[in-house]
Image (cartoon, rainbow, N blue to C red; front, side):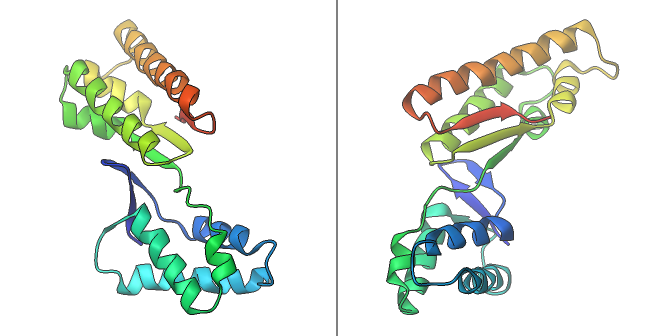
Length: 180
């Protein structure tokens, strides 16, 4: 399935369980049974896997397509209940470090800030950063863990935490964290 673009530069995995959960929640409280929502989600998955030509689909486009499909099936009440919150955004810290280059910590923090802002402005409610250890070793050009690595790891963790604090003032429902 394609990735889902959230905001200007963030991507999320489009996963079958997220589609099923979204459609099952939309069907709750309507006359549509949950099994039908699950069948529709399988149809969405098949379309995205077999017929969608791109590798990335915008979250707005994805939700528009789902709503139109539901309306065409006469399920306007389900279409109207869809929570358009995109799936969790996973940010690869090691990929950002690779893009910034060894020793270019300022460039790394700029890229990370851009990814976090993009995810928040795109409507994501959960942002998870992965690959911290690999990221730190790459940025510090260390083969072995050192005090410099400890310091850089702490700086990255503090940066994500402070960004999360700032963002949650405007959007209390969002969660940003370093997952590994």
